[in-house]
Amino acid sequence: MTTLRPFLRPVLIYLALALVVGLLWSWIASPALTLRTSEGLVLTEFASKDRFGVVVVYVCVSAAVSLVWGLWFGWAYRSRGWVLVPVAVVASLAAALLAYWFGVRVGPPDPTTVAGLKVGDTAPQQLALDTITPLFVWPALALVGIVWSVYSARDVDHNRAGERDEVVGR
Image 1 (spheres, rainbow, N blue to C red):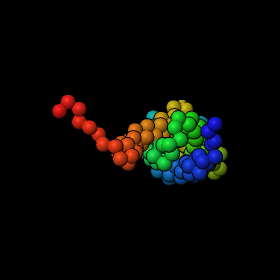
Image 2: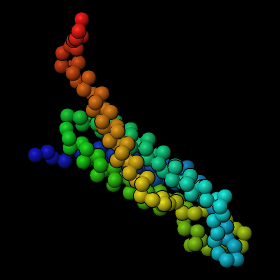
Image 3: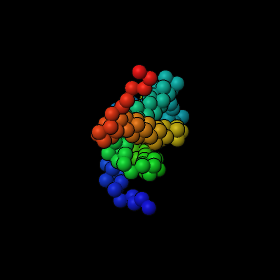
């Protein structure tokens, strides 16, 4: 039976990286600005492109971090076998949710809760993902990293064993 204890440290590192992703997301993303009118808060069509930009920033930062973590995790723990996959998927989904939650918490508040807005004032929208799809970038790229590092490590492990590749057909 495989114990999960050896995976505690890499998973905690991943979750810490998720907090960094959430912070970077809140710093880098440029949320759409809502305009205060006499009817309430309005999002102009021009500003709506910034809503998509917020998602793109989340995906790009998440993709980079999860790919690097997957490469490292696959390399460092390749001898553990198949159990890397479920550990990476569960850790990735937890990291995705943590990064999202933390980014929303440290990012701009909901503009409907901002006091003192007068007609003509603008306020940034709260960070948000309009769909759950960006959350799946985490496990997808972590698995790509694991497959890549485990596959490339086969040659290194093979050569360390002192075996030589033979040329066939000469």
